[in-house]
Length: 325
Image 1 (cartoon, rainbow, N blue to C red):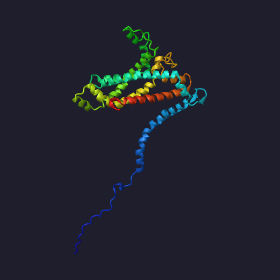
Image 2: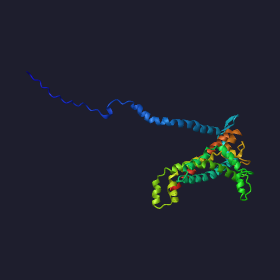
Image 3: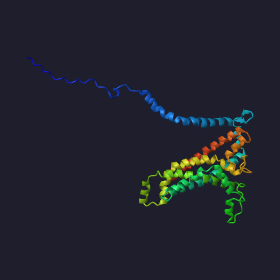
Image 4: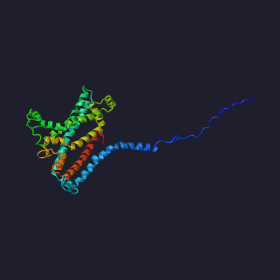
C-alpha cells in the first residue's frame, strides 16, 4: 500500500510591478485637460460677448460717426477731426462741461461724506438697527422722475417749501432756476437724497468685514473711538471707497435726468442761458434736436475722455487715504 504525501504548494511568484500611472487606460485624459482649461473661459464668455456688442461696438461706431458730417436724414461726408476742433472752440459745450463739473463736485463730495458718517452710525449697536438700515434704501427704490418732480416743487419760487423756510429768517424768495449757483444746489440735493443711502449701505457692508480684534487691540492701547475711525476704519475701507468714487464719478459726469426734469423743457437747453445744461443734455440736444449726429458723437467721446481723466484724478486722491502713497 503506497501512501501519497502531497507536497506543500509553492508560493506564487510575484509578477512585474506596474507604475501607479499605468494601472489602466486613462479615460478622456486629453478631453479632461481641455475641459478644465476651457470651462472657465466658456462660463465668462457671455459677459464679454455682451460687452463687445453693447459696449465696444457702440464706442467704435460712435468714433467713426464723430469723424463725419453725419445728419439723421441727410448726406454723410468724412470730415476728419473737424468736429473735435469745432467742439473745442464751442462756448456752449464748455458751459455744459463747467455745469457738469460744478454739480458733480457739489453733489459727490457731500454725498460721500454723509454716506460715510451714516454707515458708521448704522454700524453701532442701536435699537431698531435693521429698520434704519432698510430706511436708507427707500430713496433708491423711488422713481428718479418722481424725485425730480417733488424737488422741483420744493424749490418753487412762489410756493416752494424751501423758500417758505428761508422766509422765516427774513430771506427773499429765490428763483432757483434762474441762477447758476442756485440751480446747481437744487439739482445736487436731488442727487444726494437719492444716492447717499445706497453708498452708505455699501460702506456699511465693508465695515462689517473689518476684524473686531483690531478695535479691541486699539481699545486696550488706549485709542479713542475717533482715532480708531481714522486709523483703522478709513484705511480698511480704501478699496470700497475707491469703488464708490469710481461709480460716483461716472454717474456725476453723465448727469441727465435730474436737470432735465428740473428744467421741464424738452429742448434740453438747461435753462434760459444754459445755466444748468450738462454735457449729456448737450449731446442729446445736438443729436435729436439739431440732428447733427457727427457733432454729438464727438461730444460723446469728449465726455468719455472727461470721465477717464476724472476717474484717474479721483483714484490718485482716494488711494492716498489712510497714509497710502
